[in-house]
Image (cartoon, rainbow, N blue to C red):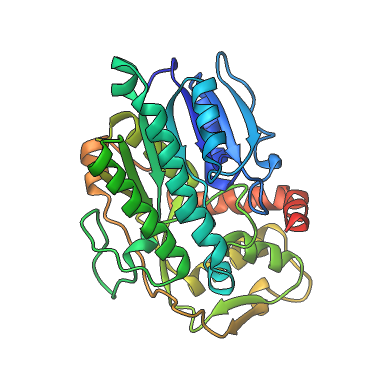
Length: 345
């Protein structure tokens, strides 16, 4: 990828997408951010990003399911790459209201791919050869692991929630558009992300927000579900490598090499908060409450990203303990941000 290419980032006002927008701007890219600005995507996620040299971004409010709008943006800005972060992503929400996940994650991806196919078909020579579409997916499409082993790019898809099923469907569409039409699509999967500006419904910011508000810290089931955590900066570095070096039609997985039981993670957060913002009369751990387990709750996720390391040169900069401390510090310093985005929901 060269700085001559403009890039369309769908879902770029969300947690992970905005981090990637910042990386592209820092590299001198002209970025068009397309975001529907639903409850988890908001302008506040982009306000900290400053133009760097030739790098800039423009926010367009719109839906990836609006094929005409996507095609208009592709043509007007001579887009060279498209990265699709746009998705409904919260599992609990997919259980209570799956339709939005079908509309965005499946129908939206279809319309985006079709707009890209029409645009790509009219490109000439080197522009056509350089064009890429990168579909951001999740390890949840693989289902649940037992106590040992890890997922990799060859693992079968066995999604267990409406969310993961909708993302698996989008993965299949991306593959089919490559195999049938030759559209140069790349798919990436990652483990659980964490870091600054994550919407407070997700586990880490949710626990921090509840702890500081004096509310119960709800832990599903026995709390022994295991997740592998990757810092959002490391994930976005991997996405950049996939865009630069990945082969069209291929899949690349990114993990954090940081498996933690949910209950252990909550205790880690409480310990960090006790040290940084002690409360009167005890520990934040006193607020931990076990609640009825989530329907279809996957027991364990973990990613083997040796392919991405070998073929893309992927490495991780953040140790989990270091990244978690920095994340807690960010939320303590930005409690007003949490209040602002929660009010939007």
